[in-house]
Amino acid sequence: MFKLNIDKQLELVLVEPSFASSYYNIVKDEIDYLSKWLVWPKYADSEKFFLSFVNKSLEDYKSGKSLTCAIIYCDKLVGNISFNSISNELKKVEVGYWLSSKCQGKGIVTKSLSKLISYAFNSLNMERVQISVATENVPSRNICKRLGFAFEGAISNSENLNGRIVAHAIYSLSKEQWAETQQTIQAGY
Image 1: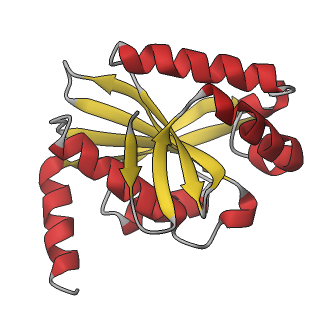
Image 2: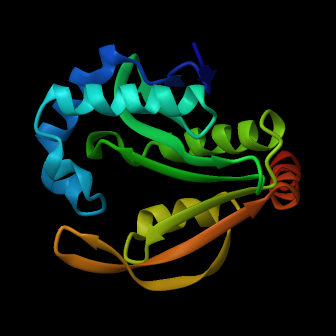
């Protein structure tokens, strides 16, 4: 099973069918919060929805199209992070993530994304990591900035978020930019 240990409290684990009930419980409790930035929560009305999601994610993982991981914090599933798409031809991955509102402000997504970025560049030999985020989603945009992503621009009318049309900010990070960011961090700046 695919697993990335981040620290004593945090790990990323390839999704598995046993996670369906945990995913459902988070969404059931936080549907209004999650629906602010994600389209799918309103359709996530049962464990069966998440079982289907997990099975599709595992099929896509086996064929090398994506990598979907549960975020496990203090031995509890608290969110999801993924390479929504993996393109070996373009040497690029596109990242997506969500986290329970109860666990925000602890650096969980920043650490998780950092680990996945390293995996993309060092293990998958990718050249580019890309994130598309609603322009109004300031916390996610700040994560991109914190990790050294370059803002490439905004695309208007990119997504209908449950009746609200939003623009997307596109951020990218190259292998070279990531190496420079890591050197700066290690130097203590």
